[in-house]
Length: 171
Image (cartoon, rainbow, N blue to C red; front, side, top):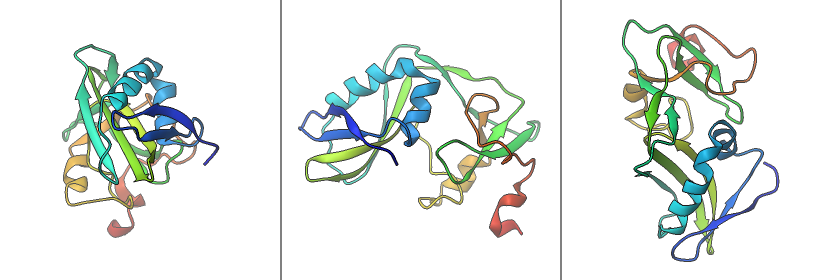
């Protein structure tokens, strides 16, 4: 991770730090820069009280498009690793992004009056991806019926695969 900078101060005075290069939030901010002032405002109006917080807020304003879509058996699915990530993500080549007004914010490592803005994106909160360190019982059911729209996120070249054989538990 690179150097962090102060992003915002929460309603209860917690300093929210941000890595503008190496964080998940930085990739989303590059894709949807229009959400940055909304993320700051939401944090400034939120009491940060948990060691980790993931929450979403409907801004009431269409801010752009969410890449998260529901999928079914007709979708053409591909898997790839996104920039600043180390696990595969499910993508669909069959659908288009959808208008969205909800912003999700994930804060981590809340301690001593500071925390990190881990991620923030346009769209609803989701379970962690399968095979990630925070995978839970909702991850696989959710991510087998949802995907991101292909071509909307920066991926690591050469990581694309067309099936789930990258998953260790399927080998």
